[in-house]
Amino acid sequence: MTLHDDAVQVLDGLRTATDSQEELRQVYLKHLGEHADGLWRECSDGHITASALVIDPEGGRVLLTFHRKLRMWLQMGGHCEPGDTTLAGAALREATEESGIPGLRLLGDTPVRLDRHHTPCAWHLDVQYAALAPGGAVEAISEESLDLRWFPYAEVPDVADTSVVRLVEATRALL
Image (cartoon, rainbow, N blue to C red; front, side):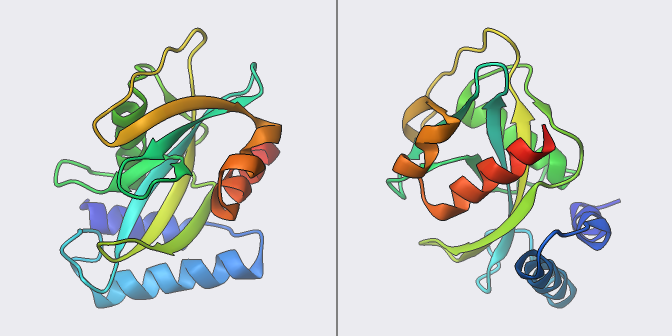
């Protein structure tokens, strides 16, 4: 199975909780149906990306990165790479690379939510997962970040945009 096939399968099977999430799911599936290269950054009409919110449920906090290019607090994530075989695997890879935390594990194999946003390279059709940090996890800043910081759930709305706030809310609802 190719990454494209996996993405279609994941999105086909995703049960959305709101009309806006269902609309995005349909947009993503249409995009993949129209673009064989719809997962790759070279697709100028936009591309599917994968991200994961790193969460420490016992500490009641999430790890956010201050993105080097976008200059905002975000969850870990980004472009799919040729070695990725699943969206979930791409999200976990991105979270591990950008957080520097070994031993992350996804909270289930189903995306938590979808988010579409414009970036300097193109529209990102982001498939968002949640990753649980192991006890005692210590983060390490990657070249994509200017900073990494743990934020208590209640502080996320003070530092991040509504997309990240919604991701935190949706993730907490699963715990």
